[in-house]
Amino acid sequence: MQTKGQETRNHILKESRRLFTLQGFHNTSISEIIAATGVKKGNLYYHFPSKEELGLAVLLDVQHEFFDILEHSMVGDNAVERILHSCNSIMVLMEETDFVGGCLFGNTALEMTDLSSRFGKVVREVFSHWIQLIEQELRQDVGSNGNGKTLSPETLAIAVVAILEGGIMLSRVYQDKKSLEACIRAIEGLIRI
Amino acid sequence: MQTKGQETRNHILKESRRLFTLQGFHNTSISEIIAATGVKKGNLYYHFPSKEELGLAVLLDVQHEFFDILEHSMVGDNAVERILHSCNSIMVLMEETDFVGGCLFGNTALEMTDLSSRFGKVVREVFSHWIQLIEQELRQDVGSNGNGKTLSPETLAIAVVAILEGGIMLSRVYQDKKSLEACIRAIEGLIRI
Image 1: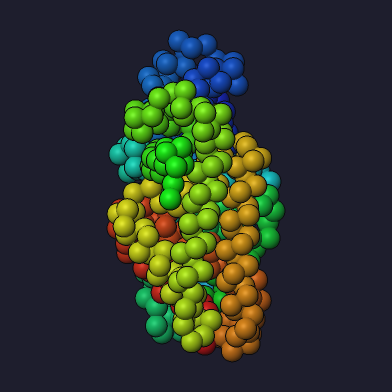
Image 2: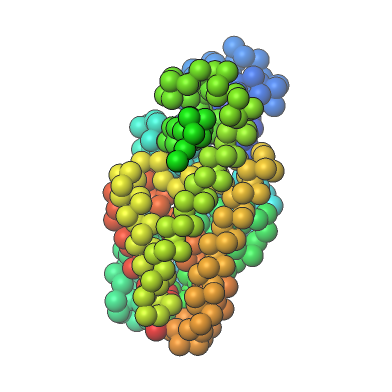
């Protein structure tokens, strides 16, 4: 069971995530977070001493949730099926928000990586871990993939994550799922036996 | 020959582009642009009545330059070669800036699309035109590509742009060219005969 303090902390995290994802980090003010959460300023600063600490806590929270969903979605008889299942679970996540906001890690990568080494570190960890998970899957089936003959599992894994991030971006730009769907079909073409 | 006014306008555009690409639009203040350009506030507002107008003018300037480079780089004996050449010209552009900043359209897409319909419109135009150029190339060789049998030229074109944008993002995150190189090899795998 959550204490009142944990409940407040989580409430601030979820509302801040929504605002950061939608508007970006720099473009979201502490006043907006206070207005959205209804939490008093002193209480907010008790849980998160600065906006940067809050931003980092949101990233770590999303990181935890994302890998939980990703790893649970990697089910199927072979690597290709497991990877495609995980891509489809990302499609479901994006559809739930109507492609508004997109991927918080991608957004943060583009908004902040050059500016803040602490944010950059989390974003690098997320992408490295994600690429690794896919690479491990592909390594099991190496050689049996059409492109596995000429492209290494690492190259294919980097490309899978890149296509998904690019696809999420395009679906956000056009506000429809067509782009991300096309990208997932291309991933299938890239890794299919 | 440029008039003094055109020179000033261009100088403001180039410096603002550098700052917006590096720091994002919201995170760059008019004061920073004034400091970076050495142009007086009144003169800046004479050329660009608002920060939004300046942001739009920068996007249109980059759009023009980007398609000029892209279309000139589409050389080669067949569609695959022409597309790969254009990918490599993007790699050169990114290397020139050491992958700091990345793609202004991608950054703007993630920072602004939900917020400003005028910025969103330019970003959508850029991606649509880019996808179209690649789709036209692939349409000439349709059926001869490995994935051309199962994936339409449109699907492949969307995926090529998505991989490049994702690859630019990852290369920016890791500050090295490995990710974008891997992505270009994957594009080759995806569209090669």
